[in-house]
Length: 400
View 1 (spheres, rainbow, N blue to C red):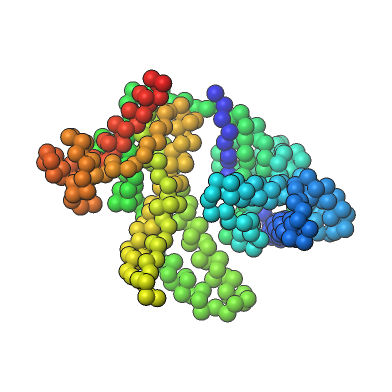
View 2: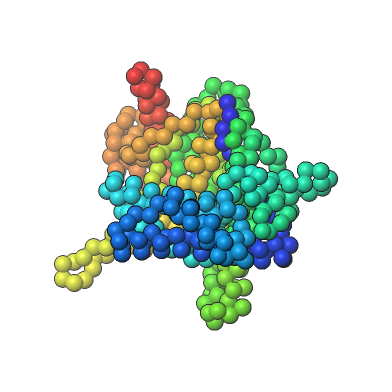
């Protein structure tokens, strides 16, 4: 079995190449915004819907009129930027059709446009462009040159697309590869249910806990100091740019630490179990702000916004969404079965007698059934319920 995988490597550009990469990103951002403005104006003035094909056909004239700007970069990478806009419009209309909050495509500022894609290896870009080099790997990018890559692992499969991404002051190359051979692990004959939490990142139905490292909370003092320093800098000054870079570097470090912890926790589960049952969590919905409560007299009632904000911050720091995404990828590659179940009432239902009541959950960690007196760690109880729900779901699917 073959799967699609992405490989991300740190770039080591020279100062001249950093300038070129920054200019490439800025020109693609300008192209995106201009194409968005074209669509908006055409519809507002004449009721005409402009599509990707029409804007792609205009690229030839845009490049000819601006040879020192847009004309420097790969034609296919500019087409990919236009497809990105077209995809944003497609998602917008899909949300409108589904009755969701639509969110019209927005213009991209410098901080919201950080990636350029080359849709085909060999068309304006070339991975491992110097295969005979004895000690280094290079990627060739049109208009930028041969950029050195810090390749820390072997690339598998066939390279299909190449993307360059800016994260703070760092630049990365991302390879999307097809036909990556799956690496199935030997069967263990064991299944498990897992409960996601804030006190513990993961609790298994076997009673084991995976610690929540709380990387953002650990870095909170340094972040607060850096943000105070940023607030004192004059807008547009060189010192403010340096202060912004320091804040961004701290956030990037927290993000990398969270990813590293999620990879390690997910790999341990995939190696130990054949079947993993988890909650189908809607993290974006769970971390919404508390809705305001008007009192009917022009004022507002207490709505627990402060407590909800703290809980949201803890959930996002734990990185449930990141962990579940990584777990699904690793399970697919390892040939493991992953089952998502509805988490409703799993934390208040007794795993011993199936009695469901909010009073069963005494504290964050203690579960004591009011019907049968069964006592167990609350997260372990929830994990057992999740495990049983997953097995029942699988049995029902097989029977059908």
